[in-house]
Each structure stands twice: as structure tokens, then as C-alpha cells.
Image (cartoon, rainbow, N blue to C red; front, side, top):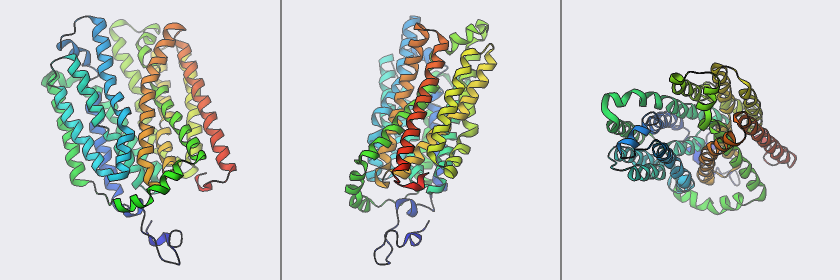
Length: 429
């Protein structure tokens, strides 16, 4: 959409107003999307490929008892997500203030450096600290969501964010596979250097290929209006509902992760095949999401984000229930893949909705809060699953998670109806 197309909507007396950020970057967004997909893929491959050998690395750093190895492995793995959750709103705010590209470059360079330093850790304390700093300084995928979500045309934002989500999901799926055989070639420490080099390639691509027309002076002029809009009560209610929904996406997906191996063992899988079978089941959800993320994002462009959010929440909640009654491991894998297909539409639809209801110059900060909510779900989900599985049984984990998703669908439907009845921004429906 050109600036001239909006003449009259923004201009006074027939004079056209300056083009918006999305309009100024209309010629760049497709190329930037490709770079962001590549960068998100490579950074998440590098971050997730340590899963198969993280306990081995912890042992190399001097931890000997099995219980301590498991505890330190969990702490080291979660440290990065904690760091990202803490700083995502800050980086989003700085993206609104100084531009989206600087945040991409900062994240890529920071993660490349920290990934290489992790390969030189001398103690498990250093490992945890470096993983935490990697999360604090990184967040390339989060920065990509901000750039793509603000540059893509409104009518194609859902599709673009779905494509970006597919790249991230693919990275999370491929990473553990790479981490399964790469240490045999270059050693455990060498694997981190390879990961750092991959992220460095993404950083170079970001510096050389990403283009952005960012006018800071224009943003400063509208900042007061943006803040007053964000403070509106209805705006706060909408954002609160979206934050809860974003948290539920990861909470639902991760609630079964701590107990999946135990659950698979109850299904009669032999002990020597437990780890491999559990890995397949874990990967099934990401694979299912890869198949539908872009399609559901495009559906949000056609029918509206609220409808996709409510529908995906209901469908995912219903798919959780039969997982409690499976008799074979492959049945659980199929249901997890189906769950991945239904849950994949949530994040693109949520980000697209933020694009519509939040002022252009506050989108980065709001998307940062959404990222923090997601990582909170990634922490809370395993805690809920582990505690409920231990206290009440494994089947109850599926019932509880499904019920939470249905309740969240009801929350979103209520917000949608109230907003529709108030006739505020009816084009969103």
C-alpha cells in the first residue's frame, strides 16, 4: 500500500501524510522475511542441538552423581529461556525506539559470541551463566517476529508470521538431530563452535541483506499518542487476554515433556527403545506445526485472528483428551502431531492481532511481552506436568491441560464478543 493510497485518511485538506513504517518498508519485507526465516532456523538449531549431549557436557565439567547431572542439565537448558523472557520486552521497546534491524544484528552477534564461549566453559557454573547471558543478549527469533510483524502488509501478516514460525519450528526439530551426530565428528566443545559459526553466518546475512527505512524522529512525534492508546482500559484487557493465550501455547505443548518417557514406558515400550521413542513423540508436535503454521496464518488473514485463536484453542484442548487413553506409543505420536497442527495457528494469529490493535510505535514492546509470556509457559508447563503426574497420575495431566485450553478459548471468545459489540475497529472481525 502506498502513501498516496491513504491520502485523505491521514492527510489534512487533501494533502497526504508521511507514509507509515509498513508502507516505507513495503519493498523490503519479502527479502527481510527470507533472511529472518534463515536466521531463526540457524539460531534455534544451534540452541537446541545440545539437548542430546547436554548431560554428557555437564559430566565433563566435573558433575558426577546422576541426580546432580539431571538437575544441572535442567538448569543450564532453562537458563537461556529465562534470560530471553527477562529481556524480550526491553529489546522490543528498543526496536520501537531505534529500529528493528539493529535488534536483529545485536541478537545474532551476541548469540554467536556466547555460543562459542559456551564451548570453552570450565565449570558447570560457567555453563549456566553463559547460557543465561546468551538468553539475555540473544533473542533473534523474537526480534524477527517484531520485524516481520511490523513490515508485512496487514492483509498478509498472518501468512508471513506463519512462514517465520515454520522456520523456527524446523530449527527446533532439526537441532536435536544435528546434536545427535555432530559431537562424534568434532567433539562436544567443537559442536558449540559450529553452532557459533552458523549464527555468525546469520549475522552476516542480516547485516548485508536486511533493509529497513526507520525514521526515529517520526516515531518520537507519535510516542505520546501511542502511550495514551496503550493505556486505554479496553486495550489493556485485549493485551492481557493475548498474554494469557501466548503463555498457554507453550504451557500446553510442554506440560507432558517431563513425564513423556515415563508415559511411554507404561505403554510397553522396551527400556532400550525408550529414549528414541520419546524423542520421536516429542518431535511429532513440532512436525505437525510445521505443516500448518503458514496455512493457519493465511487463514487468519482471511477470516480474522480471533476466530483462528478460539478455534485452535478449542481444537487443541479436545485433542489433549484422547492422549490420556492411548494403548500404543504410535497412537500418542499421531495425536501429538495432530495437536501440533492445531496449536500452530495461535502464535501467528496472536502476533497479527497485535499488529492491528496496538499502535505501530508500540508493537515491538508488546510483542516482547508476548515472547516473555511464551517463555513463562515453557517454564510453567513442565512444572505443572511433573507435579500433577507425580501426585495424581499421568492421565490427569492431559485432562488438566485440555481444560485450561478450553477455558482460555472461552476467555478469548468473551473478549472478542465484547469488542465486536462495542464496534471498536470492526475491520478486525
